[in-house]
Picture 1 (cartoon, rainbow, N blue to C red):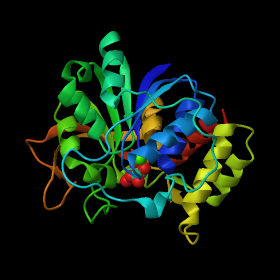
Picture 2 (cartoon, rainbow, N blue to C red):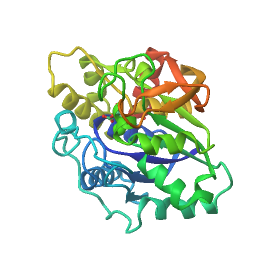
Picture 3 (cartoon, rainbow, N blue to C red):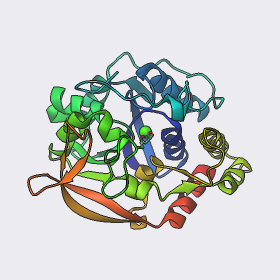
Picture 4 (tube, rainbow, N blue to C red):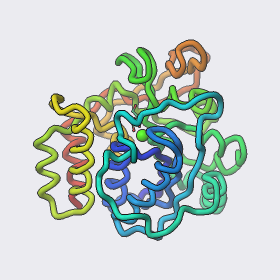
Length: 299
Ligand code: BDR
Ligand code: CA
């Protein structure tokens, strides 16, 4: 199996991505670190523990990371994800308390103990925790094999202002550090994630499944619809990261040189010759990706 660390701010679509990773045997999830993003750090951490409990995976360590961006203010997303970050979906409480360590303290020894490149980071939220790992434990950071991150937009309108996507806009300084650090980054922007969509029929199909991951995902997608019942379908941003890790053939990628605006258009990606070389997903086989996601969730 692919050994992964999940860095996340659950969050409805984060939760579906995590359930998929825990249900899909081709992943070995070694730790979960949480970050403030969709909702505050206490809630994202609690949700991490609750998702592990729901899947009976209390042995996987999870730790709270950053409570806010490296510089300046976070963005409040409570309107989308609900006061508890998961739209009120019922989950058990965590089996174990979060680790007493910070995210960096949890990740650094694991990275240093393993082979170079053995661990892949699946990044589903603002990149603050990775930037802190890079700043505080650079030798450990450089042992990460690859980072696959949901974030940014190339041509699509933003969801945090006209030109920026939430995860990058929430902490553009962190994203800039991570992009420039030299560990390979594959970015999945809104241009692709908005094409992976769940509709009410998908919800019914998942709800009918015998698997816990599928039924919980149906509830999470239902909660996602609840904020706007007139919509035909809802985007599944973060699960794209997991699918990229296991099924890269579903995506078309291009290497782009990318810089990040940290000022006037906070979080905007700018293609510039001096920018970091980033592999960016620009196309997706959306039906193939949905089939793979539903199959993994249904286990
Ligand atoms: C990203 O922001 C969050 O709302 C989602 O969980 C996803 O990671 C989409 O812009
Ligand atoms: Ca997220």
